[in-house]
Image 1 (cartoon, rainbow, N blue to C red):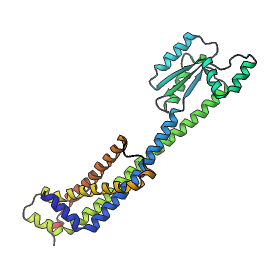
Image 2: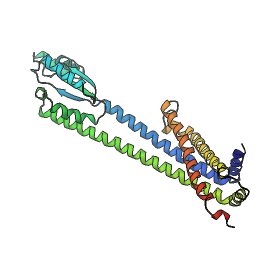
Image 3: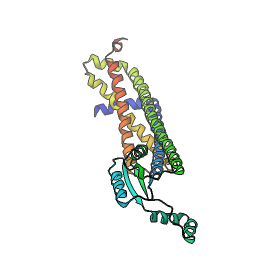
Image 4: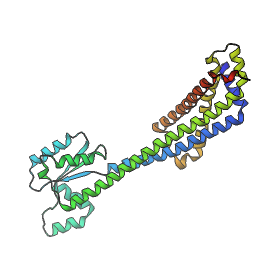
Length: 294
C-alpha cells in the first residue's frame, strides 16, 4: 500500500510529464487500433473473396461412372481440399438455365445435345493450395480423363493470376501489421523510457538517502515499476475514451470476443512494455555509481 501511495504521489508531482506521457501512449494505441481494424477488415474481405474462388476440373464426355467415382475419391483424400462437389451434365445445364435461360432455350428449340461436360468444383483450405492441387491433378493417373480446351486453360491462368494477387495482398497486409506492431512497441518504450528517466533524475537525492539508510534494491525500484504499470493502465484508458467517439467511423463493434481479446492483449502489452522498460532502466541506474556523486 505504501508503494502505491509513493507511486501515485510521484505521478502527481510530475503531473505535466505524466499527462504528456499518458496522452502520447494513448494516441499511439488509438492509431494502432484504427490500423489494426483496417487490417482485420481487409483480411475478412480477402477471405470472403477467397471463398468464392473455386478450382473446377472438366471431364471428358466418354468418362464412365466408375472413373468419376475414382476421381472423386482421390480428390476427397487430398488434405488441402476442403470440399468437392460433382456437377453432372444435367446439373450444369440447370445452372446455366438460371444464369442464361436464352441459351438453354436455344438448345432445346433446335433439339441440340447438352454440350456441357461433367465437372468437379474444388474448394481448397487456402488459396495457396490451388496451384498445388492443379499440378497434382494434371500429373495424376486420370489426367487423360480431363477436358482441357484452350479457353479453359486461359480461364485457369486468369484465375491463377487473381489468386496470386490475393496472396500478395494478404502477405503485404501481414507485413504492414507486423511493422505497425514493431513501431508501436518501440514508440511506447521510448516514451516510457523518457518518463522514467526524468523521474529518476528528479528523485536522485531521495534515492541516495534510501540507499544510505540501507533500503534494498527491490524496495527502491518498486515504486518506479508500479508507476510505469499505472502509466500503462492510464494510457489504455485514454485509448478507450478516444475510441468511443470514433469507434463507429473506423472500428468494428467492441462486443465481439475477437475485439475484446485484442483490447485485453493491448492492456497487457501496455503494462508489460512500460514495466520492462522501467525495470531495465531502474536497475541500470541503481547499479551505477553516479547516484553517490553530489
